[in-house]
Structure formats: structure tokens, C-alpha cells
Image 1 (cartoon, rainbow, N blue to C red):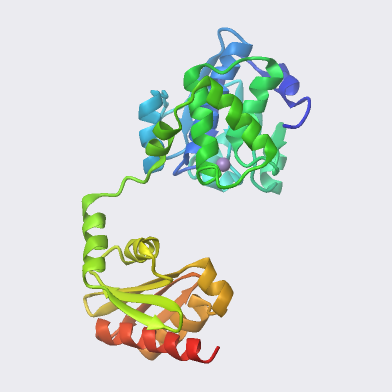
Image 2 (image 1 turned 120 degrees about the vertical axis):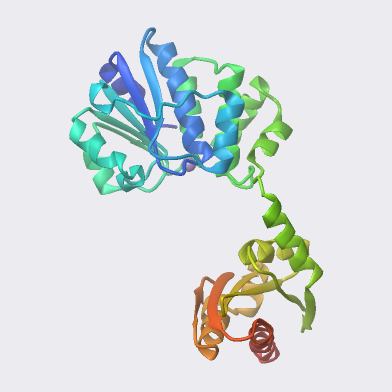
Length: 330
Ligand SMILES: [Mn+2]
């Protein structure tokens, strides 16, 4: 449960004017928990003036959600004139960008509600610090606040909370009994899962879709042992194309493109490929590939990139050869 007693402490600080803030490039959990909180505060204290202010911008998906739920956003909040500030879903104050200094210098008490790892600077700045790392989303904490107060979320708030939870659990791919209790109760209030998923789907613009389709059209399939490795070339969106090819069924995708004499390569593999072969794309493929072509490569186990110089087809062929040698030596 969300830290016991925290709601009572929040109530004791609640004044006339309140502002809710969250991190820049806000995801749906940040936006929706802010919205649910704003509605809860109005139910708790009639007449309280609540402003929701993004510290900088919303993510593309959140913009769609804000529009769909008609969430009112204030671009130029009067931070200094507030009685209380809330910071939701925001692990570090740095994520407030330019607003950070204003918030700290205002002297207005800050309430933090979050599920990220504790951050010493944020803890020190907060008058009330409600951080629950066991919660899979800030919306889950907000739902428990409603429950504690015995307030039933209306259908718009229920939808907002479901959106936030769905986003942070990667469409309910993870979560605890707590998460699914909240989800189940929220679904009774607003049962439109299909609509929630469509709101959360990534809006891909036309040029990205064209790049992905061209990458598919030009793709070469290499059968390396039991692994399906694909390589292809496209002028832009190499990383997106590589992800797309994995979802088509490849175990590993190498996508290169050249621009102004420089070759860029994005590589992605499945978790299974890494688990079974121990081939680390960043260390074992991207780094030697970058070096071989006068550039640099780096990355993670299943996701890596290279900037190099030369002919894009030669770079791709070399990448496949590096993989082939490694795979035959396993
Ligand atoms: Mn979150």
C-alpha cells in the first residue's frame, strides 16, 4: 500500500492554490497520475485551485492522451504564488529542467509522489516524500489514494489511471497482485481496454513507415547456424527498421545507411539470441566493426550502433562475417 498516513499529512498542508509538476518529455504515467491527483484534491477539499504544469513538454503519446482526456495544462504556472507543489513520477529534480531552480527557490513546500528509486536530493527538497518502489506506476499509488479515501474515481479518472498503469507495465506484461487488483477494479469503472491500447500505440509518421518498408524490401536473409540474421540498407530510421525486422521474425537485424560519406549501422537482436549465444552486440560486433572501418561502435547486449566510413554494403558484409565466425565457434 502507499505509505500509510501520507494522505493525512498531505491534507494538513493543502492550501488554496496547488500546482502539480512532472518530468519533461512526460510519459502517460506522469501525465495521468497528475490528472488523477488533481481530481482527487478537488474532491478532498472543495474550492481548491489545482493547476497541472508540464515542466517542459509531453511525449508524443502523452499529447494524444492529454487531448483525448481533455486534461487542462498550464504552460506558465505561477509557482511562487502556490501554497503547495506536487511532483509526481519524477525521480530526480534534474528532470524538471529549467523549472528546477524556480521550484527550489520558491520556498513553497513540495510533496513528492513517485515509484522510482529514492533520490537523496529530491528527498531533501521534499516536505512530504511518498516513494513506493514496489508500485509499478505512480498511477497505481494514486489509485490507492482514492481507495484509502473511499472515493470512487469517475470514468475519466478511471481511464486515466488505466492508461498510466498500462503504459508503465508495458501493456500489463508485468505487475504485482496489487497492480492487477487496481486494474481489475478500474476496469469495472471504465472497461475499454482496446481504446486504451490504441491511445498508447506509437504514432509512426509516414517517412518512418516508408523507411521500414524499404528496409524489408532490400533485406538479405543469412542462415547462420539456427539463427535468422538479416541485413539491409536504408537512408534513415535504421534503428526503427531493425526493430521492425525483429518483429517480423529475425533473430538479429543489421541495418546500415550512408550519408555524406559516413555509414551508420543499427543492430538489434532478441533476448533469446543473446542468452543462447552470449554474443554481445555492442562489445562483440559493433566495436570491432567500427574499428575496421575507421569509426566507432558501441552499445548494449541486444542493441548497438556503429558510425564508420566506407561502402555501406562492405560494412554490412563484414558485420555478417563477424557474426558468422562467432556463431560457428560456439
Ligand atoms: Mn512511472
